[in-house]
Image (cartoon, rainbow, N blue to C red; front, side, top):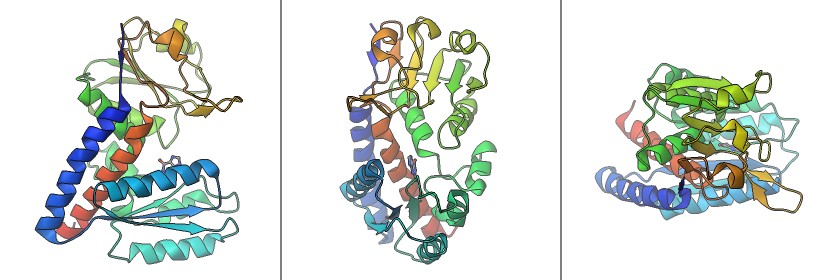
Length: 285
Ligand code: GUN
């Protein structure tokens, strides 16, 4: 029987800890950690995420404002807003919800966020800090996965860790965090040959491909820990991960479901980063 890793419960436990830390920080410094969330356009999925971020911040005693800009907002106008937010002491963290409308250069926008307020950890400064082991902010989804492994006492050191997917948001930083915990890490991607031969050797398999049920039972070693980052919407409207859960779960020693696995942890780690940013601001570093 495999363990079903409960992201909801882990997230709730972690948020309780964060709420206590926020209360203690406010009592000690008089500063309320604050997060600005910027959304451009009307992507329905983004609207749900942004709303969840707002509720999550309030739930742990943080200050938050959501700035919802129209689809036709120009890149210059968005850059101007970011500049303002960089200088606004109420906000210790700034998050620009992705994707942005096509006429806006995402890289330019993300690079404009002050590295000290970059709670997504997307800025090249923070990416470099992560790679060299000097990180302040941890990329939210990979950090949420590490937290799940920690809560479930799953050690990484010496394990064969295989990450499927090489995105800047998940795959690459995931590989770095596993490496930092002494995992032996392989990253697979769309050009990888004989992917099954590689995934079959994984003690810890992380799927972040964005293709429904990409990971099938024949790709997984008996006893592996399987982490599913995928959130794919099927034609019937149901959510489905990158892993064929029904076929893979009997094989795995532990597995995350979709929904209710990795997803709930991402916003929780954003809260952690916002508290870190407030601490940085107060300490002047
Ligand atoms: N869109 C999907 N995932 C993310 C994320 O982690 N951060 C931001 N800013 N936008 C996203």
